[in-house]
Image (cartoon, rainbow, N blue to C red):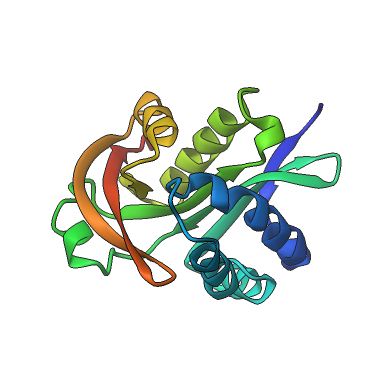
Length: 178
């Protein structure tokens, strides 16, 4: 299937929220409570939240567009890390956060995620970042392997609130080329 990676527009907010509802639960630890996942989707990955992200000049949302259907997205935040656990371990400054990077499960194993991460790295570099960082659940072995294969290395840990549950994330960072 032919797809392109492009910058999202305000018109993509509904499709992004629908895609997030499918992809975010896949990144959660196996014991995650459905109500915690639902609360996170409502508070962070809703249509209104995507509209706000798309209106924020410090945020870039890239999408995998397969003939008008969104099949993946990444969300980059070009602001200094606010979490002291993160800020204290980053070395490639200024460093952009890869806040979200998800691909529809029907596209797993087809190279789409590698293309999306490559485009995300390029976008961060083009915006002047020297590094790219992310938080990934410490139990998500598949994602950790993917990020390591993509040049990220573990540099620390941080906490992540999923509804009423506190999860533990690895902080990973990589340099980007200009």
